[in-house]
View 1: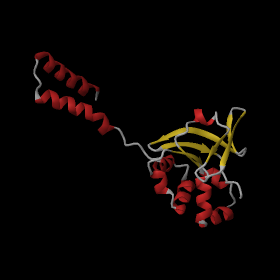
View 2: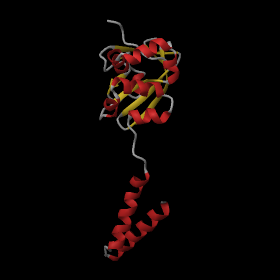
View 3: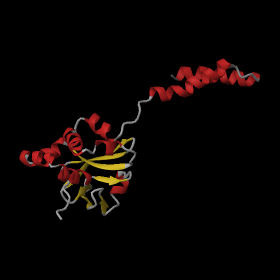
View 4: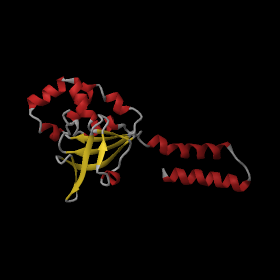
Length: 179
């Protein structure tokens, strides 16, 4: 790749010095300029990023059951507070099965873990709260250097970039307040 770049630049420079613009010089420069784009993988959206991580299988299953996959594949940007499979495992199996079967309740829980916009960790730590797409507030507090949400869920990893937002990993499923 570097060698192709040097060769193409040399051809372009020689052509420029000689006052000529040969088709070979232009096509070599064009192919090198396009090469990084061809070699770079396309950025993944939030859902693809979660699937690729391999630790959000239950979350992806829940998003599918709630019909929210296309929403989180959309333009966004969104900030997803993503519970891991271990976080979902803290919910008793019977309760989790009931939640997965109740589309309205599941949608409410999942939307409570999404914030409109791209909110990086550097911003999250300065906020006392954030409003979820579900509509309720999520309390944010830094305790002993750890970011805690609603006093029950710790942010364990941050700023996982996706093409349409960012993922912050949490260790407990956030439940919206009962109304």
